[in-house]
Length: 103
Image 1 (cartoon, one colour):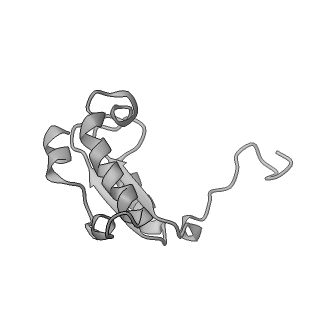
Image 2 (tube, rainbow, N blue to C red):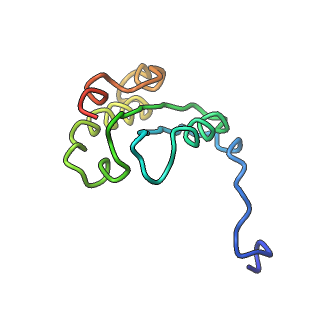
């Protein structure tokens, strides 16, 4: 409360985020909506990557057995950003078909 003068901190200006942000989203996510993801996606000023997984739930990525379908995409994305691979993955604008198929 001392810092913000309120129990709730102010909203962060997402346009200040200039680093790369990857979004893995799903319509079945109980913690967020696709509309909110789209709104956030537009506000970030840095490069972005969006992967829509049609049937995944929020925790599937972290603890679900379907994580094995997402991990290769995440690894490719990190390689693309770190210079271990070209930046094709980062510029692709979407996730591979196998994530959509298993999602």
